Length: 89
Image (tube, rainbow, N blue to C red):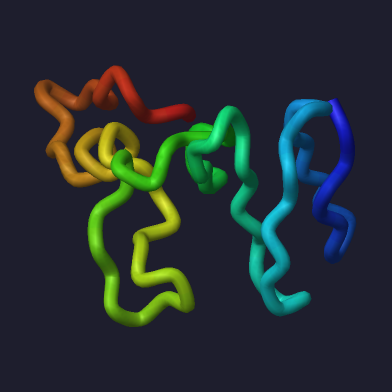
């Protein structure tokens, strides 16, 4: 794993053979791996394909910061006071 993003004490790691796409310094970059573009999910801390993110018109890349799985888990209401399976306490 190689470090590709450092800001405010936050370190982001990517696979060694990933190519980092250039973006503004204030945003997290996307990576290219095996001819497919990936984005970092801020909730589950993993790299996902761009097809795993919902549309959001307010961001620079027009994609939400959470992947679809995390977004669904965050919007589900807890049953009987328990957290959803996708949430981290």
